[in-house]
Image (cartoon, rainbow, N blue to C red; front, side, top):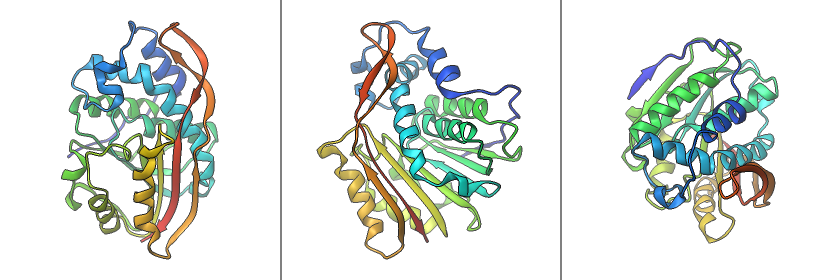
Length: 263
């Protein structure tokens, strides 16, 4: 685990314009087969760029559509921890920070934990998060990089305070059938005391989303799940269209579940 402290941003960075668009404007024609349709553990800078070009806009819009169902106004002035599971290049964390900026919500971000098996994606994610952090947030925030597969995680990989609000981001990861949901569930209930908000999004609205439902049901066996919400409604938003090399309004399929659990 590598622990680093982000420097105060000098200018306000926004995800869609400054990270997503700035990356794809420089990219050649992209083929998603090269990165296994977004499922591959990325090994090179070029593969990381391809992922952002093909899927960065979809991540942004799916998360922006999901975040209003969580009462982030409640976090104003409070201490929070962000845990980004299978984070890739930390796009979910970047979009969450962008959303807080947009809505003028200023929690005290105590820590951001980025969990990812690709070391190069993790390094880039760390860099993107540093760009996104604004002076409105705590200068004492820590970015914690955990370079592991989810199945290889253990309690020593996390440092969490029971007094903080925990926000868990699962963006395009729970539908990947490469790790044990039961093990993940037990890791969360053993490592994160008290208030946890869990936000799960997926690009699928079909049989693939059973993994999100299974994960939710593990928690739902106990009478402690609150403020549960789900949606499978597609959205229509502007993303980069590879065939025409333009930004166009596109149908974005999605499935999401989010809920609060007090452990």
